[in-house]
Length: 248
Image (cartoon, rainbow, N blue to C red):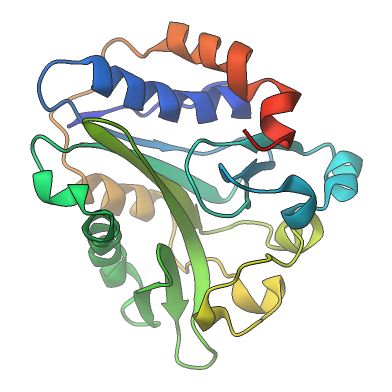
């Protein structure tokens, strides 16, 4: 597995880089795999592949605040990211891990690694648990578990992309302002509002990065970041309003 610790200038380019990593792996020889951490320097909304923007996102509020709305190619609901929210991505080979062709096992594989990495950081304060299909929650024992990480999956022929958010020092009010109550909610949410449901994990940025990096050992840095593919993906997909606002 190679590391790709690159943050590009725009949110669209960063979303595109996750996709480009998957494409590069698909085109490569052997069991090429990648691991990436980045953080958007400004707030951004990222809709899921099948998100109906008008049903999940408060578009007028986002426009008022000048917050871009983008759409990723993986599933799941819309999320809000920005400063105080780490983003990670792993591209995993089915050749080296054929058992992960089973989607349920793929979710468990990634979520299990991240849970094991983060639990020691918060052990004195509470516990990190997997909830729903691919959420990570923090449980301090005083309130119902609260979500600090949403994750999604995109599967192609020989690899899959798994990526998500890790809230650690995020302005949580932006979630209430920018996102509508989701039309589909996991049972454990118990119809809680955004402010009651979401939290920051009580851990520092650097220790989270160290823990994530240890969970996904790499053999070196990718030398040729696929910037040409990123540019093409932004021009043809992630930079287009038709892609970001209309269901593909």
